Amino acid sequence: MIAHVHNHITSELQQNTRTDIIFILTSIILNLITLAVNSGLVEKSRTESSTLFVMFVFVSLIVLVNIVVVIGLVKGRQTRIKLVNGLLLMYKDQNVDKYYDESLLGNYNVRYNLFIMVVVCTGVIATVVPFILR
Image (tube, rainbow, N blue to C red; front, side, top):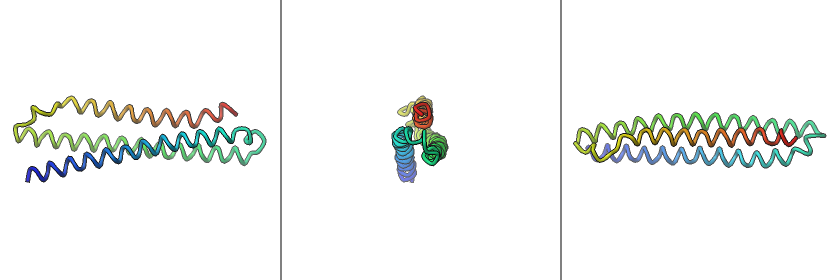
C-alpha cells in the first residue's frame, strides 16, 4: 500500500509540474504576442480612438491572464509543499528520510517566486512599452 501511495503522490507532483509549465508558458507567450500587437498598433492609435480602445482591451487581457497565472502558481506552490511534506512523513515512517534533503522545500519556494516574477515582469513590459511608444 505504501508503494501505491508513493506512486500516487509522485504522480500528483508530476501533474503539478506540467500544470505550472502550461501556466508560465501561456502567460509569457500571451504577454509577448500582446506586446508585439500593441506596439504595432501604436501608430494608428495616435489618430484612431478605436485602435487605442483595442490596445486597452489587450492590456485588460494581459492583466486578467497574469492574475490567473499568479494565483495558479501560488496554488501550485502550496500543493507541491503539501505533497512533498506527505512524502517526507512517509519517508520518516519508512526510515529513509535521510535520502531526501528537506532544504529542497526552500528551493521550490525560490523557484516559484522567480516564475511569478518572470510572469509579472513580462506582463508589465507588455503593458507599459506600447504606451511609452505612443
